[in-house]
Image 1: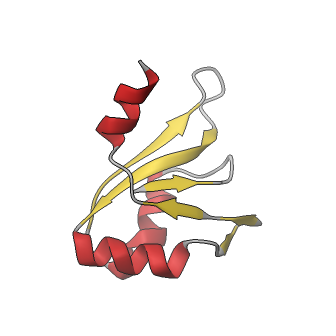
Image 2: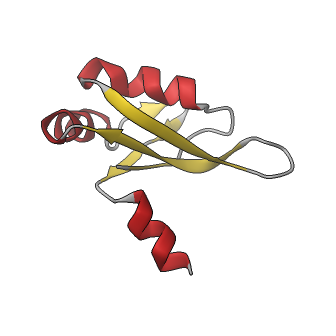
Image 3: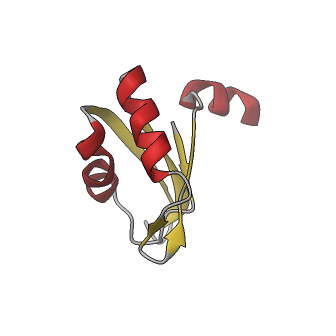
Length: 84
């Protein structure tokens, strides 16, 4: 899943903690600035289908550290291919 509008202090650990109440989080990748190492505001979370749907329903549009989260289904490998 694509997770957007993350705060600059978001980390893989904090995003995992955010999604783990909805099921097993397989992987988390938070995009970080190459120089500051701060979150660029988005990342990707990998979960099982029904657990991912539950997380999306619960978290999309919800406030998180002063920002409104955007959660969408998207494959990280497809997103990388689009940028090339």
